[in-house]
Image (tube, rainbow, N blue to C red):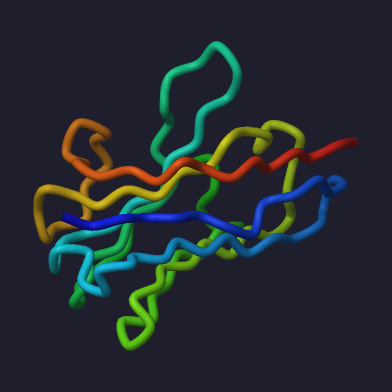
Length: 124
């Protein structure tokens, strides 16, 4: 089984940037897709971005398209989420997750293993 850990969160102002990292201690992500999700207080998990582990097209939520970029470094077994032009509505706990499938899905139910999350707070 995989073990995921996120890092890179913090408190920033509107328009700032952050880069989140998701590391897999098993160094494989089970050869499946990896996704980023976020959860605001009292809200359900919201899909942010996903990437196939070994290739293919990335997927983004409409709310982050053009501002966020998901990428990977398979040698290091790390997935990144570059977040630019941050807005207060981006404030949430961001979690990475390994999918059941190699295809990059937007469905939270397709993701089996989850990290603990990293907090992102964006102030006006």
